[in-house]
Amino acid sequence: MNYSAFIVLMVLLSTSSADDINDFDLSFVVSIDGCPQPVEIDGGLNLDRYLGKWYEIKRTNSLYEFDERCVITEYKLDSNDNVFVNISGIKEDNTDVWWGGSAEKGSLSNVFNATFIFYSPIAQYWIVDTDYDTYSLVVSCNNVNDLLYVKNAWILSRKPKLESDIVDSLVAKLETIGVGSANLRTTTQDCDN
Image (tube, rainbow, N blue to C red; front, top):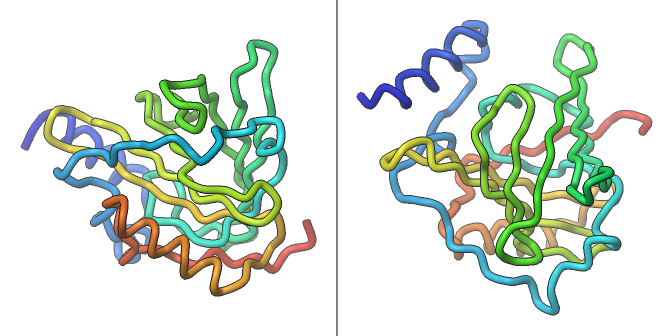
């Protein structure tokens, strides 16, 4: 096993309880088939319209998000015109959790180079699709080394619930871009936000 992959696995195992490991599926965290190739969103991303609060509806497994519910992602511009990503949620034991990061504009209007607290490598953060008022589909991919890639996907909504036909359409889009949807988990949104 490559040293970088070993380090990622050891960090994951050392920071997780036995229950987390038993419930956690690595199949979409680490893959060998590369990152999806981003394409420009129709008309380019209108960042001003995109900023603000988004509720997490579904997500793939990730290295930092195990059992949270009521997950909200808020996008704001920082003083350098980079996007600050603030993510909050509640764990199964009802403790509040928070993590965040910063995303610099990348090669396309809807692609960013993101770094997140507790996960330092720069990752591609791609807003695949959005209508700005209802839904957003986001994919992140990071080349850990020249062999392993970490992929994540999120379906977000401006409200705590999203129509099932929209969710189904976004899930299908994940399949077409090579991210897959077998390990999408529904995020419970049962809090007063």
